Image (cartoon, chains in turn purple, green):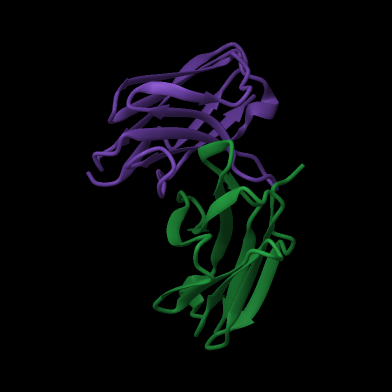
Length: 112
Length: 113
């Protein structure tokens, strides 16, 4: 596998469920990001990890919880989500914080 | 308030002609600008970038122009091809949150054969 991969590609969950999104990068990058893309809105940065430490948390509700166990993996743990959280969640990585970002294909999340 | 604006949600161009996608920004601290291209069901793909010390950067059919005084950048694609049909996002970084990219809403380009 090359590049940035994300699983699952599609996820439907109820408001009481707990699920996790997974991202893996095979590029040897040191920074990883979670973005949310809602319809007709710009990409919204959620979290940034640089060298496995969180460097940015853009006022994201606590029902979203990131985890970066190592420089290649990034998770987004979801619990008690709301229907308005339905969106495309994109993971990205870059050589260092601030350089060109390479995106995964995204997870299309639907919250019922 | 949006710091990066793409005011045209869509653009339609004939194959072989030039496509010009525009982007305006408000933060004068931005010093690095990027264009990404996104196909449906895929993540954005990095296309081309420009730093504020330049006013033009060219890569094959793609050229990005930066006008710092107007806080405006544009992406020119020539000649346009049907495979260029995608959503194009402008992004900028610099200033207080130096590592973070601020994205525009995107412009959907349709290149008609």
